[in-house]
Every structure is written in C-alpha cells, then in structure tokens.
Image 1: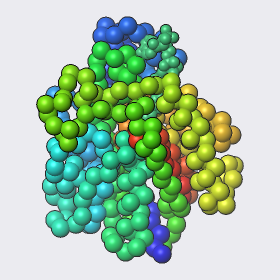
Image 2: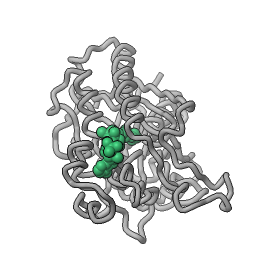
Image 3: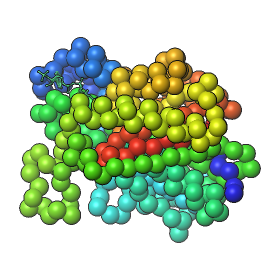
Image 4: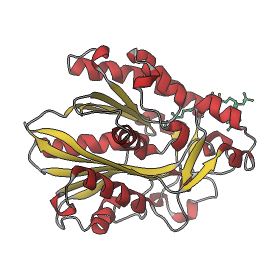
Length: 323
Ligand code: UT7
C-alpha cells in the first residue's frame, strides 16, 4: 500500500464580514448570547455574484501554489459540499474547468454535510493508496448562508461561508495515518434541509429549502459522538492522547470543541480555533482551520494532527495525519 501526504493547503473567505450586531437587527438575539453559547463573533458572507465553486477555485489555487504543483498535475478532484452551484455538473467538475486541470481525470462531489471534507479526504486517500491517482485536490467548500432562514435565530447566527483545500500526494512517507467514517440516518430530522429538487419544485416553500435544526439535541449527540471517535482513532493507530500535537476540529460551536479537547486532555492552545471569525462553514471548516494554522506557522512538518467532524445525516468522521 502506498502512503499519502498533504503537500499543500489553501483557503479562501469571502470579503464581507457579518458581525453579531448585524444579526441583532434581524432576529431577537444578542452579541453576548451568541458569543457565550457558540463562541462566534463574526462570519463571512458570500457576495451576490459569487458561487460556492468560485470560493473553492481560489482555495484550490492557493493549495496548488503552496504545493508547487500545476493544475495539469492533478489527476483527481474530490469536493465536499452541501451547497452545489447546480444540480449538475458537480462543483468538482466546475472547479476542474476553472483551474484548467487535467481533462479526463475523475472529479466528483461528496455530500456528508459538515463531515464532507473528512469523507472527501477518506475517498481521495483510498484512490491514491490503491494506485487510482497520484495527486488529488481535496476541497471543502460551502455557501451555508444561502441555506439560512434569516428569521430563525436558532440557525441564522451559526453559519458562514468559505472554502479550504489540500493537495494530497502518493508518497513513500506516511502522512494520512487513518481515516474513520460513520453515519446514522435514523436521526436525520434533527438537522436537515427538508427539501431538495428530487421532491419537485411544487413542494418548495419559503422555509423548507432552508436549514432546520433541533440545536440542543444535536449538541448532545455531537459531544458524545466526537468523544467516541477520538478513542477509536487513537486506538486504531496504537497511539495515546499525549501523542497528538494539534486538534483540528470541525468548527460548529466552541463548547463542542472544548468538550473534545477535554476528552483528549489537550489545552486549548493546542486546538485550532477559527469558529470566532468564521462561524460554522460546514465542509470548509476543517481545511480552513488547517490552512490557517499551517500558514501562521503553528502546525509544522512532523506534527500529529487529529481532524474530526460531525454533521447532518448524522455523519461523523476523523483523520489522523502526520503533517
Ligand atoms: O455542524 C453541524 C453540527 N451542528 C452543531 O453542532 C450545532 C449544535 N448545537 C449548538 O451549537 C447549540 O445547541 C446552539 C448554539 C444551536 C444552541 O445553544 P443551546 O445552549 O443548546 O441553547 P438551546 O437551544 O437550549 O436554547 C436555549 C434558549 C432557548 O430559549 P428558552 O426556551 O430557554 O426561553 C432558545 O429559544 O436560547 C434561545 N435561543 C436564543 N436566544 C438568543 C436560541 N437561539 C437564540 C439566539 N439568541 N440566537
């Protein structure tokens, strides 16, 4: 089996910053409630003339630059998202076209809500390890604000837009040590967008095309589930909590992140936190956090990273990475 390594990271955030004060004008909420319950101070919002693939393309270009790899050298694109620009082609195909990447190489989206990036990483990793490709772009990109009901204070304060990407390369050196994916469709109605084009446009209403969440119930399941996956990931590698240098978690809520860090016995200084400035960017949150900490020099070659995510489906997953 071939190993795979991350050889470049990139990310992109839309320019417009939306503060909690702006949300106070839309719904009955307060900056202090949002910060205390979620840790979020601001989020980015996609411009009217920008699409999810626009964000993904810039993040991918930055990852390619960091890896010193040209688009023609990419022979696989796997893109995690729950906000595709179109029903088809996939965002991955649109990014391939935007980049001028190798025509004929496979490109497809993976839909696992907030766990989509970890799912996409797992899929790309398997391609590379079995010789199906040599160099992959793995992207997480979402324009979650387009799925928000701006009258629902239980959801509209939580999400933001963005994209992150990595270049993954087949290698002799170990990089992606293991990936772990799970799903439980039985609890789908706790967190979902209850409409999709397969249901027919005559059933689309003002609210059912938007995110609906029973937040407190999701919160409890997320904390329990992420605690379990930490153990599963370390056990699979025969490693202990002390071996982890950085937790790079999905950024949904600072309290969920703190609970996972406690479970790992990691001080918050060893946890990459972007939720304050990004909100929950769904598929983009882990690669955005990873790129932030790589570029500011916190994450260094050789560090052991634990990536973990939980999202609608329910879906959840993790990756243990030697950076
Ligand atoms: O990424 C995918 C996974 N998603 C998540 O992991 C999100 C998980 N859930 C959460 O992050 C939290 O549950 C929330 C931040 C959504 C909510 O925090 P909570 O501490 O679980 O609050 P709650 O839902 O129990 O609501 C407490 C109170 C309620 O009022 P009453 O019934 O006590 O009078 C809510 O109506 O807070 C109220 N509330 C708000 N108040 C001010 C709910 N949203 C808001 C708001 N501003 N935006």
